[in-house]
Image (cartoon, rainbow, N blue to C red):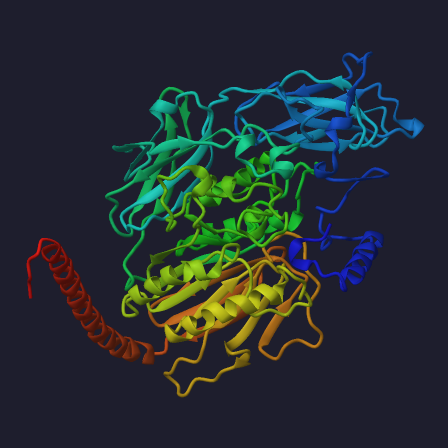
Length: 639
């Protein structure tokens, strides 16, 4: 299966030829691991290909064949050694070991992950366990995952504290003195979940009770794997607010319950003023995850881990990095709860140090009949897990039921940056009134740089013109709806993803490069595609390249690092493998924007006064007419 961004019927033959050629190469580091896994002499398909309804359980189970050590795990993400002996693997029959929750029904759900025994009579495999909420067991199966037979099972593996909080993630709110922390745990201790924080690890003298708890069930899904073989109990999601925070301070915190245990003490730095020293952030889309135990797991893509580890090293070396902006296609769980668990574990060392701000993508939201663009890209999740796992300062009503929390667009400010996050998976016109109001509210003297983001690109080098959601089809609709607004309010950069590549344009308006009228004048937004986070690659680019694109890279993965102060805005494209910068450009803030904003504010105030006067006149005339009608009915006359 091709990534949805790459689907183009006329182009599929070429993409498949590239994939076939990659399989024959001695090194296939650039080849997407989500396609198949090489294990011994077998090509193992991902768990999404499993047909558990065809699985059977042998009547004569082999006893003592499997053993898992250690049987008690200390920390989330610990590794287990699974050993076997006495497997008759040399007769050509495939045997594999799958990891499951103890309460899983193997005839209903697919394995969390699995590995082949490789035709060996005995041996040991390593598995990473990232769900402390459930006990784990390993099963030995015969035959492939379309019609497997369960023939043996291991001892049960448990966590020392199954109620430990896991998957911590920070997020900004609409208030600069707040920070939201969210995590996943069991229901145990739910009424005593808190966040504690303070100025030092040993001085956590502030506390706030969790705002609430939520989860989702199989019935909350729209169908597909999300309501079928990929669903497992996702645990309970908690969020707690740290408030009254001082500007530009280092804050230590932990989250959890005094009854069931706390996380390790973490730290973050609060937001500073716009005129403080420069800040930076990481931006990308289409990240996914990679299980470091080399198991076959759904949506596994090795470059994702490279990108995450490189960002982590960058974060430790550069204290100015303030947040992550992940523009859609988050984990590629697509209905598999176990993939969300693996993803949260992968990003946790970053997401507990700086806010992990997200936008929604097609693989989180799209499902037929739900108001998206028709494809089955979310495999039935239809946005529910995404919004509950990542509570952002959305424009929707957060007190509403979880099935109507479907307005995932918002904005936030950090230092000299005003960041806008739009949804390319919802009706564009429904977002425009909010977008206009948000753009009008920006004070360019305080936050001079406006960055707009959405998952799908507006301008792109791609051969995908397919209806209903081809790159150019939806891109042109967004251009029609929003380009004039971006020009009117002088947006500096538009960051998008979806196409798994890195693309950078010149300043663009109406499909052409625009030069500024002078050295201090605004030209047009620069459009960037940064969907190279780590999930596969999209090779379907136009030949020759459209003239508006200055750089296009469809091979490598990594992230964009943006560094900004009041005067300059620099974007570096960092590769996840060699950790080097492979593209860089710098913008200088055009001071003409400030002059235009002063004129615009004056004009808009005059218009607003006129509109208010008209409104008062209409209100007066309405009241007069109501009175006139009332007295006329009573045989009175009023002027």
